Length: 436
Image 1 (cartoon, rainbow, N blue to C red):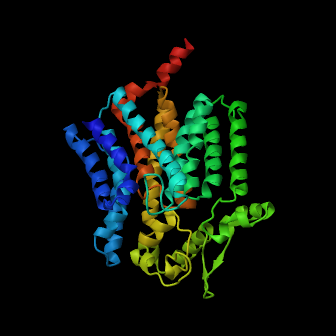
Image 2: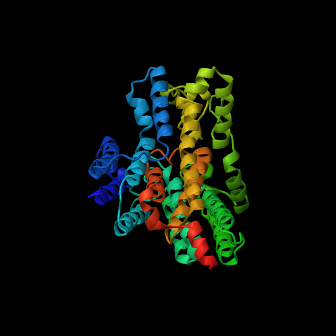
């Protein structure tokens, strides 16, 4: 039953967009995602063992509630704001306290992979029968395109980890196949960010496993080739992003496409009323730093609440945060800092950093058996996907729960004491055997 509850959780997690599209309210998905891990804990009927990070999650929720009340909001809003970090922790807690057999773990992992590839299938159906649309992202999302970049990065990190260990091209191709999800939603970011994930993974792999050179010819050649192809495709495809005239590359010469593509992240915008607005992630991040440090300390500590997000006044683009003059470019950290303050943002990052450090510590003390050595590496790499997404791209690593819940599921399996004998062999013991 516990295994089936986790499997059902994963299916619901990756079907939120589909459920929304057929008219099932979001509250059903949220309630189900909270309820299922709690049911797993109740079915265990054992003394609860607290998983790492509970203090940071509790402080995150309390800070959200206190800041929300300070801004005159009902308690519902800060609780909704913090729900996905809570759901992520609940799945970590459920797995950390549950014993699954090896067969059951394989079945759960298989469900994760199936739901991953369902997103590719749904993207292909979208391309052939509906056309490219940003709002739809597989079966995950039906009201915005952010996950169309974040999810392919996350899925690529998992399969590229398998490629680094096995050096089988099928794992590399499987990871790259998720670019289809981004392409179906017209996303340019994947052409930059997936190569960045590959570079970080190569560096970590060469550093963590002595004797594995960074420039491993069997690995680096296909990686460099793929990076070149991705950048070339982004520049040459006439429909790289045809939703706006500014990004419709088909109207530009190839030379101008290259210039436009690489200047994209650094362009500024001005509104049609002459006041300056930020329209890029870099510009917006700088604006948030300037504004929050120059205003009252209360703004730094507790943000502006949702009123900063809701008070839209200008008619330029899809304006948000009118008071700050921000049109576009809200990332995860700016979202947290503007709504409920910098301390909350630090708590958010602190939770992921704690899990990352626990995983690294576990790798030092235990030698994980195959394929859990790969899963450990992939889960460590997921931390860097979070950092890139949270600080440089958008809020979708945590909002929606798709990535954080899978991240925490694997972290729970890897860190739970009951799996140490099954998944690992003591490093000192294995080294003494090798020396004999």
